[in-house]
Image (cartoon, rainbow, N blue to C red):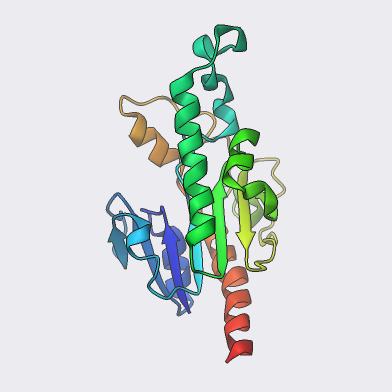
Length: 221
């Protein structure tokens, strides 16, 4: 089957699907950091190319619940609204609404951290099934890349099933790498580092959602 991973520059999910024999391509405004099928540009440029599954990672900068304080001047409600921030949050949420309205792919998954309630309502995501997972669900090595704590939300269309844990970890030794990441001179560098996806999580997606969509295609043939 054909899989599009929008908003991915690392190739982690793309390569998990490729390893299982699927035709997968990542897409991002940045170049890929791992050799493989990649389109550098807007995902709308390739949206109509006949994908069976599309997985999207919209930028979370203005929609993450962790940034709620930035919606107000001086990071406090009594400081008044930060109107520019509200506009940017609304634009980001509308872009997801537009994606859900116009994307021709039947099976869709959208990933983001825990999201502001305002953004969920404006984007229309609140109407979709949602699941919150942790990377350590999909790891077995306490010292491996999957043993980290990072609440990751998935909103889905097309009947995609909830992801099932595949690892042996219980979360007690999960590292707080994302939360404790130090600021950098370039905010974009930090954003990209915080968005890093883990291999066990990617493998579970390729196995479980890949099997589901392949089954649907086989049944329709």
